Image 1: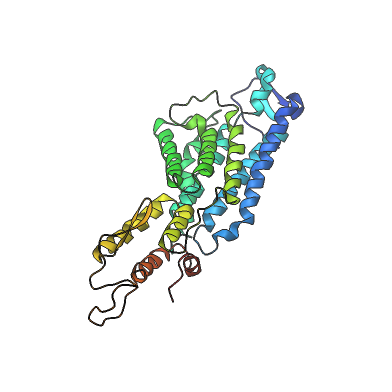
Image 2: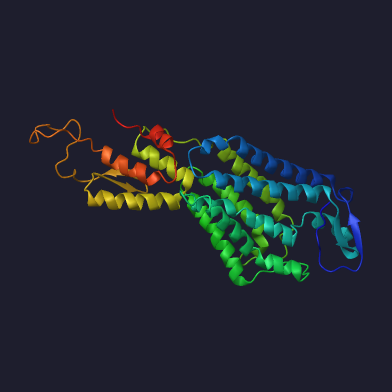
Length: 335
């Protein structure tokens, strides 16, 4: 059984689950099962990411959820070493998020968002080594604390702000997308797990907050895996492609694709441009181009489909993220 180290002791007694209220043990077991169920559900719906580069991000999510579920389970069923003076506070000891191990698991939950930021062919597989390196680097203070035998982990102010920026970046990437509410629940779970190590938070007083993070993460993850909220019904075309891409890859990649598309649209005078609200028509048509239904008597030239050139460009830009089948399903070529 795992043992959670507490501050230096004079006398140690092992307190089992029987020494604390049964409701606490049941709550921890329920948290473990709910988080494990969320991880299992993610694995069952992984086929939804077929044809995209988001597979590694999904597996990082599964790994983080299973690790947290294991922490809840070990805390509920294992024995916890406490000082003789803390015997009366057995409940607080069992609900305490172990400093070193808890921090390692909490930072593991940041890896899926980082993996999504590198989900671009052909480097999306190599990028996972960068994600792993990030996790190792961010846990250097943790390793130092373990090597020095410190009873608790206390981060420097800069490390705290670094973690806060990572959490905020993950939230901003999904803010305004279809998954903003489930994503917010997951970010709140991360705040519960990282609470004592974020700016302006005390090292004490978070003894039970970490237990709240599990249900929050489970509900958010299950909502996403079940497809809630439902996607808006959009006809096949440019809006559907970009809406689905933004919901899957987040705001950062969607804005990068939109920026590149708009540069070419202005250069070629295409009557379409991307805005945060979707694609909107421009003021003028390309030089010498007429859409279907226009007067075909333009010097006897053939009618040009205005959708084809932007479609080819967008298909090329998204080709480093999604498969041709994924794109064609959302914007079929005109026959």
